[in-house]
Image 1 (tube, rainbow, N blue to C red):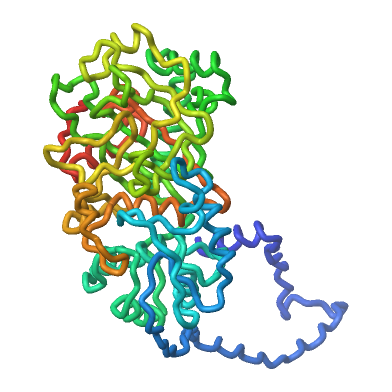
Image 2 (image 1 turned 30 degrees about the vertical axis):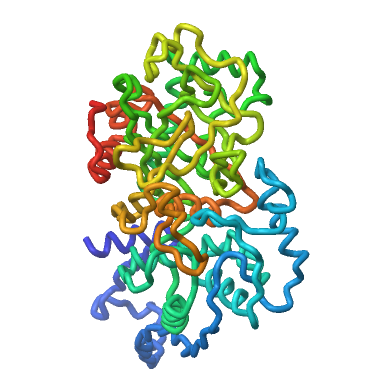
Length: 502
């Protein structure tokens, strides 16, 4: 049998079977006329030397001695010799769409999201900022194409906070402190440990799509195909309104234009219990957000529904279900108070579509949807922003925006990350931070969301696609049927939010 297997593989690769020669007559039967046979040649077989033993290649990393700069660095710091005009140029790029802020402020100062004051640029000795930026880039907390310019801008701040969060949650080394975006003596100590230990951010593998990431992408794609072929009360109205307004004049997409590919940043919102609010009771943060970015999945929670009415309105605005395009930008709680602006997302260009609570019962019902339907004009005030820690009597802070809680989040390993010890309940907590060098409270999990967007986005992309599903669009059973896995219930259980979508 073994010989047959060898012959089979020889035939596949062009080998031929050795032909068997017939036996020659014995000497006793030979005749005198037979030709004498030549004597066989004697050959000496040279033995094949054994192969050399396999030697595993050991990569020897050269020892590194890292001397940490002495400067304490934070947003607004810049290295000695940096041209101030470059800082002004950066601020114009970052702040160009910031509304309600005079140019004399927004093009000369940085806006710190966890403080109530603006930050003046501050020169530091030497090249400490460039050293920091180079480290963050080399270990995976800044994009490889990052410009090492010696200016501690919003990108550098995001990289520092992600580094601090990685040490705190992945390495489980709480000595790093809270992710506040400040690098002082303690921060440099951890940087030295990483440099000399040749460490990189291997737990956040950019561009390597996880199995769960693929499931959520598949879910969106299958949902799009399903609703292209099957009628749906809300999505049919959305399609009709987009066609009426014009696809190039609204940031809500018709179902046939949904983006579901992995080359984009996706945010999935799952709206729950929008019809269950009791009159005069605060709406709670009980909705989910799934961020799909660079092959990874991070999960947050908050609310997709309004908790109060906008000024001069008697009815609340509910963002319509479907897909919307949002741009990285700023959320300003008050046009009159320029100290309340912070990083958020705004409609990409024209605005998004909303339903109204027509009967003023503080909830979105089929009656609201069927009565007057969707507003005729796109709404450019529906942003994506922070809602405090996310629990307590205050409810959700939104007049129709999509809001994120700061208390905790789920990372791409599926771990629940607790931020409650430093999550600000509201702006009153942030007002206690009198110095940009000393933070005790931050927007916590919401900052994580913003920092991921800034740093893990594709190059030159400053937007995401937000797909909002109502309870029947992304219902419990629908999710299971399409994905073959109860991803939704698992997430609710980890966040300890009630699973009542069955």
